[in-house]
Amino acid sequence: MDAVELARSLAHGGRIHEFGTGSNRTFRIFRGQTPLVLKVYSSPAAARREARAFEALAGLEGLPEVVERAETDDLTWVMLTDPGQWTLDSLPESPSAARKAGAILKALHSMGDAALTNLSGGMTPEQIAADYTSLFQRIERYRGRLSMGADIIEAARRAPAPRSSKATPSHANPRPEKFHVDDQGAVTLMDWAWATMAPPEWDFSLAFWTTSRQVGDRAAQALAEGYGAALGERDLAPWVVYHIGSFLLREAETTSGRLDNLSPLIDEMAANLV
Image (cartoon, rainbow, N blue to C red; front, side, top):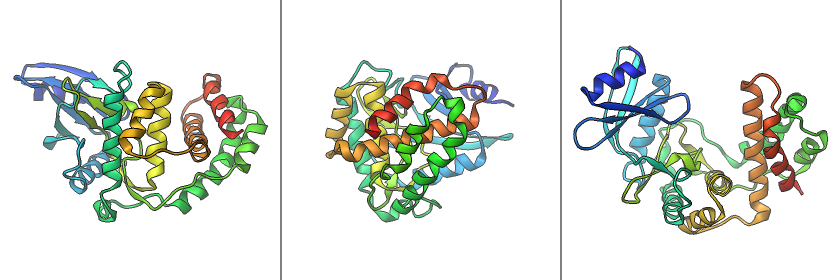
C-alpha cells in the first residue's frame, strides 16, 4: 500500500486532496461534515519525533490536534483536525494572522526548560557559533556552482556569529507556509518533527525574515508585535546570513548542476554583511 491508497482507504469513499511539500505526504480527507488532515510520515523515526513533541507541548495554543495515529502495513501516519486551507503566505497579507503566529512562538518559547527534555539533542549558543564558523568553510567547496564571489564567503567568515540566548523549546522551522489559518482566523503551526531546545532567536529570526520576504513587511512587523519583542537590525543581520548560508549549503549538497537561480539570496546575504 502506498500513501495515496492509504488516504483513499481512510476517506471511506470521500474525496482526498494532496497538498504541501517535503518528505512527508499530506492529504486533506473529506469524509462526513468536517475535513481531516492525514500525514503519512517519511519514516517511523519522524513519526516518533513529532509524537514526542506533541506530548511534551500539550496545551500549547496553536499545536495541531491529533485525532488518531497508527501504522498500516509499512506506513506510519497521523490524522489531525483540519488546521485550515490557508497559510500565512497563501493569504493576502494578513497582519492579524501574523500577529497570532508571533504569539504562538512566544508561548512556545515561554514553556520552560522541562517541556522538551524527552527530545534528544538541541542547539546551544556554543553549537550555533561553531556551526556558523564551519558553515562557510563547507560552502567554499560549492562556490563555483553557486556563482558566489570569494569576497562574500570571506566577509561571512569574518562576520560575527549570531548572538543567541539560553535555549528554550523551539519549532526549528517556523516559516510562513507552516502557519495554517482556518476560515475563522485561528492559526495552527504545523510540522513539529524537528522541535527541540534552541535559542529563541533561531525561531524568531527565521519566522520574521521569511515572513518579510515571502509575505510582506507589514506581516513581519505584526509577527514581531504578536511575539512582543524584536531583533534590532544589528542582531537580525547575522541570523539572516546564517539562515541563508544554511539554505545554500543544503541546496548545493542535494541538487546537481549550477545554482544560478539562488543569486537573489546571495545578494541578500551580501547586503546583510555590509
